[in-house]
Length: 197
Image (cartoon, rainbow, N blue to C red; front, side):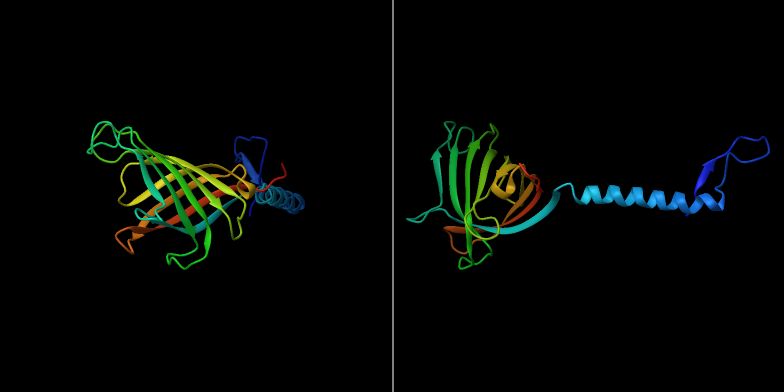
């Protein structure tokens, strides 16, 4: 690394000259110390991106249903506007229903689109009852503009280990083991605050 120092302008000389050899080592050490201390401050500021991979198991009908339409749209069957739905799905470690139960995926869906088809606003709480995050919750909010493909929602906060959390969730249906059930893959990307409060 070459350290350049401003020089007194001279008509026939460059505006910069090489630092004298005696100054180069102290300047390099000072720059290195400055860069190291700022990197340590970033690493120690308490925020870090955490990726959490989970599965949501939903049952539509029957005595063990975890989803329900509470109110149909007043505009008829071809509209979602004004409809309300709720879910209390299983949050599991894997796509197999026998995988460990980690908590609940609890949500309310409000039909907000006047256009034909699905357009919802969702408010979701992930309630962790087992595993590394037992006793903590994550709160999410965002639109559902259809149920095909990946749905993205914003993480807007949480409790317990997720206090002051922010980030996003990717949610995608990956299978329908039976006509009454589906399995959804969830990727959470969470910035967590690890400070004292």
